[in-house]
Image (cartoon, rainbow, N blue to C red; front, side, top):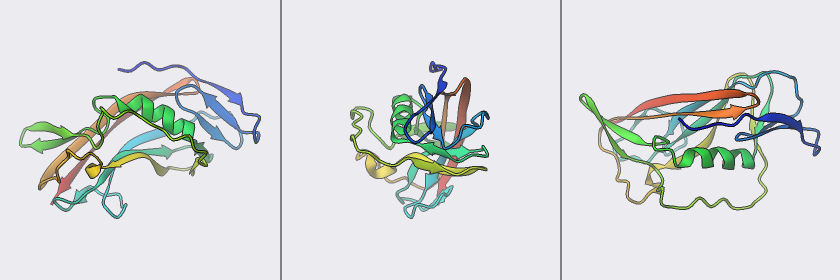
Length: 185
């Protein structure tokens, strides 16, 4: 289990937004005093960028993590949010690890990225990702399976991935406990 830090809310004097200080930074146009409730879910996309759990054998796909906003407010996921969370998850053994389901066992077959590659975040000023309220979701991390050259196209069969961790938001720990099963037909 990874360690988490508590975070506190403080006002960002640029644009009157508030931001959360700590591992996960989210800013809101107005601070309403409500608990930030977010959900993290593993997701698979086909080559056309459509969420799916059924792919054609050999088809490239991306696997990633959606962030779902269950609050009443629009949240903004900034570049620094992305860097902090991705840095936290990147070296976790189970993050985006894909298993092939075989009768009664699961065999790990790989990740869509190589842990030997150093993280290198370009220092560009990108606008934050807008997170609409009421259960809307946005993919915050994702890689095509073919991104890692060692990965082979997947054969017909069932596949599985799961991920658990915590993200500290305000004074709350938001658990991440998600899994996805998908198949190649």
